[in-house]
Image 1 (cartoon, rainbow, N blue to C red):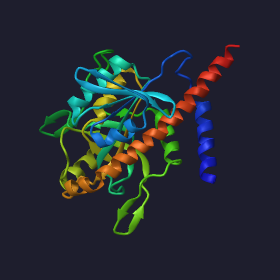
Image 2 (cartoon, rainbow, N blue to C red):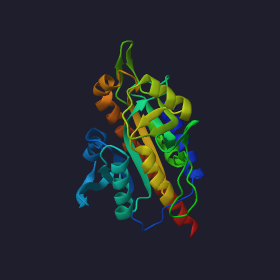
Image 3 (cartoon, helix red, strand yellow):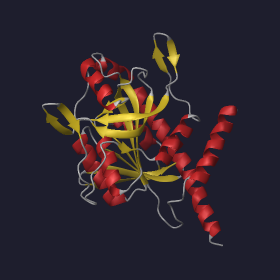
Image 4 (spheres, rainbow, N blue to C red):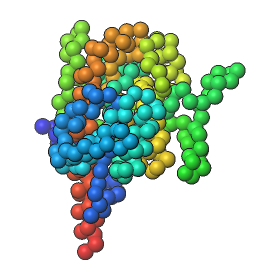
Length: 290
């Protein structure tokens, strides 16, 4: 009971803290992306008023989840595929926020397969300069503003707060371990992106040391960069399928589906919380007009 009372208080605080960014009469959409089938299938299964659209050969599914209008697309694996899909999503559907859901390799030794990382910040680990001193990360200039991008793109603070709240209200699939079943942890952390699948303890240690990263994957940071440049709130949510070491391929096969389901469940609940917040903000704004 205390758990749900705490969740209600957190939601009330969020409603009071964050300003309204939606207005009566607008058609509000949330964009949801995932790289592989299992990462978006549960979300598509939850769609009400479902419609399919094809844009440049890519499939976009629209409808409602928990009463909020969403558009869902599978990007495919890798940075270029993710960038292409994100750009088409933004151009054609004008989402108010974008959420990327799916799996990742774990870099933080305190985390285990099944745990979930909310992207407090994301970066590309394979973008920068290689000199005699080693590898140096840097941000390119935003072609829209001509300002230099940060190396780390911050996740949207309201989406992070709502995701944390959502994690307290849902039942995740438990993970089977040698010590028995365990409930996944949900943390805020750093996610790094590159066009390689990591199954090396040495590379894992390098990425952990260089970026203080908690997870590594192959799409998130480019979507975060596009959203940053377009001024769209974004959050990368990753459930760990393996530990990026020599057993990564084996662990991936074992934990992939349950990790993808848990990430999708969190997104479904987050969408419901987002709808509640936006509805309250619209009503509050409308009442202040009279």
